[in-house]
Structure formats: C-alpha cells, structure tokens
Length: 157
Image (cartoon, rainbow, N blue to C red; front, side, top):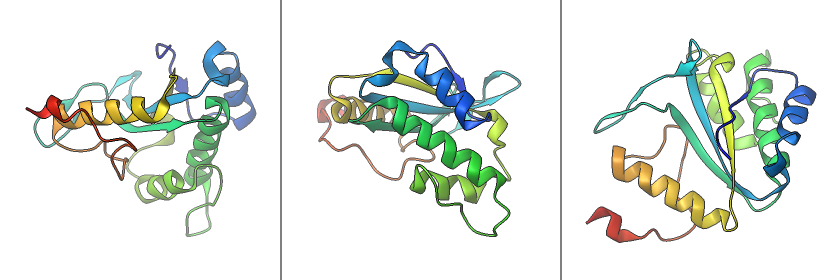
C-alpha cells in the first residue's frame, strides 16, 4: 500500500468512501500527509536538505486506519473552513490546531494522505520518523514528537 494518494479537500463522506475502498483501510498502521503543488509533491526545505516527497506529518493508529485518517481529514477541512476565529474542534484535534495556524499558507487543496498497514504501527511510526530525522536532522514539519518506541540508535552512527 502507499501508492494511492487521497485528496484531503473533499466532502467527508466522499473521502471516507474513497478510503474505505482501499482494502487495507480496516487495518492498523501508519499514515503520511503530503504537501503537493500542481499535482506533484512540493519540495520542503529542511535543516540539512530538502524533502522532495513533501511529507508534512507521519502518524499511526492501533485501530482501523479508516477511522483515524477520516478524523484527520475532517479536522483539516473543518479548520480550513472555520470562520470562528479559533480552531474547530473535530476529529484529529491536535492536527486540526496545527493546521489552523498555517491554513493561510498551505491550502487544504494541496494536502494528500497515504495509508500503510503495519502489524506493529508504533514501531513502524518510530522507524519512519527516525529515518526522516536521520535524513533531514529534524522531525516532519507537523510532527510534535518522536515515535513511541526507542529507535534503532545505530542508524545515527
């Protein structure tokens, strides 16, 4: 899995239908959110180089990807559309608050998500985040913390 990019900016029921059509959406696993421009990944400047894949966030769930990723999509769209003068509280609350702060700089129309089923999502998330840090010397832009497990520290030798 991971080859299908789901566009965030669509009605929640349509997004959930598209997501549920993926056979792995009922599995636990990890997910990544990407920043695109003109249909292609937007390179993001990082501390030591550029991320050509445009990864903004790496997350995981021990429940069905369908539920967690649908909540993420809802939080992003709700915080894009809100006129309240404060973040909308829905779905993936912390990511909603992060996106609310940058919504005028990154259009929701440029956000895409991929899912990756994994038997041990906590370890898979840790591995993905640590490999990102190894390459770019910092967390993905919207991740606020490292994974739940200690990494294989030898990757930094």
